[in-house]
Image (cartoon, rainbow, N blue to C red; front, side, top):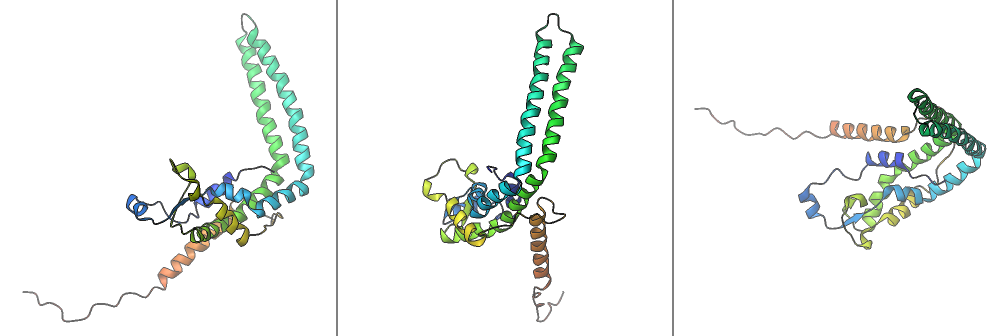
Length: 229
């Protein structure tokens, strides 16, 4: 199942290794690298294995969606042909032309909705797999940065030019395989896409607040107060 993790990319962004770096911070970085976390996630053993499991578990839905998609496309093609026939007429009947165009648009929307309903269980399973990988991606990135002695990591899209040796995407894959060798494709009841990342972010925020609350306050200054004149 070849599906780039767009949803995961957004989730991973919320768990970035560090906030946006200022120019001085970038200049002070000792080791700079680039990594495409979407590619790393897609290459991971966890995603590859889960994709095969999903293809097997949801084969009926996948086959039904493909078969029904072909049928619906054929029906849409008939409506497009009718629209083209109306468009070729001289003079054109604008009412008939608009009606033919609307018929195509309505059919396309209905087809998308129907195929979406058929494939909903598949999409939800994929989202659950992506979510599980997303919550561990930050850990894999940090481990890869440590292994490659990188203290500043950039997205390839933000780099104008680079040498191949600064790309640590494969290192991220290696760490992800170590940290998360497999994931579950059994979607829990009531699960919503992105739920695991949201829960992880909530835990991080609560831990940060707890750490701030238990921080020892600085002692009050002692000594003789200055005498006012």
